[in-house]
Amino acid sequence: MTKQKFDYQSALEEIQAIVAEIEEGTPDVDQLAKKVKRAASLLKECQAKLKDTEATLDDILQNLDA
Amino acid sequence: MNSLSLKELNATIKSVLSKGLAPSYWVVAEISELRLNPTGHCYLELVEKQGQQVLAKTKATIWANTYSNLSLWFEKMTGSQLKPGMKILCNAAVQYHEVFGMSLNIRDIDASFTIGEKAANRQKTINQLTEDGVLTMNKELAVNVVLQNIAIISSTTAAGYEDFMQQLNNNAYGYHYQTRLYEAVMQGNTSAQSITDALHRIHEDDIDYDAIVVIRGGGSQIDLDSYDSYDLATHIAQFPVPILTGIGHERDESIADMVAHLSMKTPTAVAEFLIGTSADYERNLNECFQKINVMANQEIAMHQQNLARLTSQLTLSSKSLVLTKRHVFSALDTQLQRAVKYQLHDQSQLLNLLKHSLDILSPENILKRGYSMTTSNGQLIKKSSKLKKGDPLITETFDHIILSTVTEQKTKS
Image (cartoon, rainbow over all chains, first blue to last red; front, side, top):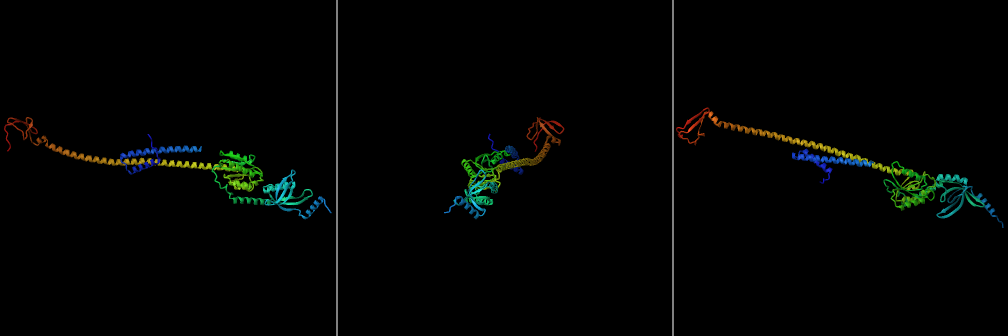
């Protein structure tokens, strides 16, 4: 399975859109679970991406000092 | 015919001269030759020229007892030794010797005249370089941020060279410099030509040097006139690589210093400058790394906050939406229950009504009200029943059963 390349910014925008939608109460119950599930999964990916970025940065910057 | 011996003639000349001349004169002349004999006497030839044409020429001497003090003082004052090509103002007594002829005995030299002469020459050189349009050419060259590949013009015997190498190679930061020495004579009459030759060799090598360093130090403080020479200055000025000088002057800067990209007092100062340049660069880099570090961390922190905020926003809003939906649902539920209850109530009322109606119509109730019911052979006697005489009848009332027989039947009129 080829995983589509993760795009932090579009993920963030999607999450924001879902939150806005939910705040407005737009989705029906069938949609709600799906949307929250999608948003939560995106959030998880964003966090993982951020953590990964942080670790990479730390690594690079530490190597620079050496 | 009267005649004189040569000695007598020369004695006459000597006498005329000593009577007719002042004891001494201040004379401006150019030294065309100069030599010292082993006993310390200085023998000179003085000339006056107009261009290349010699207008006057005479021998001169500075006796050893005068010369030893005068030459030292002169060097100290002017920074130059007495030498051919130099113009001087000297106090001289005209001497005539029967054997050696006429010569000037120099008793004193006006150093300030020579200083002025040097300054004038120097200014002339500067003017010429300015007129050539080369005076600031080397200064205007763009310099690399870090100077690591260095050509050195010096002499291995110069103390300044060792100081320079030591300073550069043992720098506290551990920077490594690529250096290459181009040997040259660093003092004396030949130094200008020798340094110019070294510049030519550097040019021919075609190596991408970051800078050329001309250093000299620890040597004599005098006889640095070659660093004021037009030839050397014009080569330095027009050289396509920045030149740094550390010639070790204690006096005013030389013209070579003036046209160089940068001039420092000593070779050590040049080395410090090179190291300082590298250190500045490294500091700058480190500051950039620091900034990147801080900014990257800030950016990550900001994103983390953002994600946390989104997470709680998502949780809250979805829960609240579920709650809203639940309210709607429970309202519906209540409505439904109520509706069902009403409906059931209606139905049960209807059923009750029906039951009541049924009850009223039940045979038992009819009997209760005093009516009776008659059957024959298990069949209820109705309008259509055919009865014959003698058929048995069973009549049921509320509380009795009466047995009888058909005796007669008539049609109701």
